[in-house]
Length: 77
Image 1: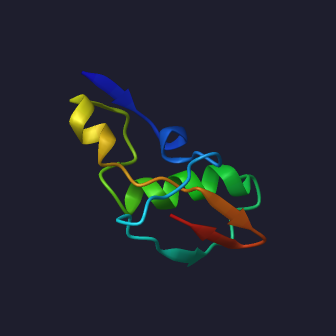
Image 2: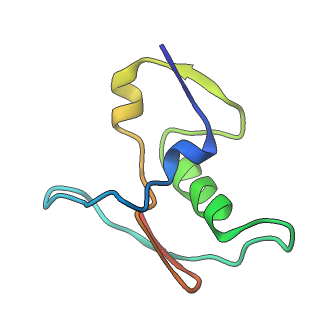
Image 3: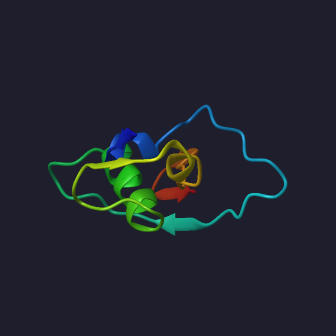
C-alpha cells in the first residue's frame, strides 16, 4: 500500500500519452495557497483523491490524475 496526498497529483515533468484524457481548468487559488497546491487539489478531487490522506494499492495510484501544466490560471490535467 502507498499513501496519496494532494502533492502526488502534480507532476510538471509528466508528458501525457495519446490515450490520456486531458482536461483544462481555470483556477483561482485562495489567497494563502500557491497555484501548485491548488492544481494538485483540483487533480485529486477530479480523480481518485480526497481531502484526507489515503493508503491505497499501487494500481490505484497509477490511475490518479496528474496536473502536468500550469499557465497563468489555466491548468491541464
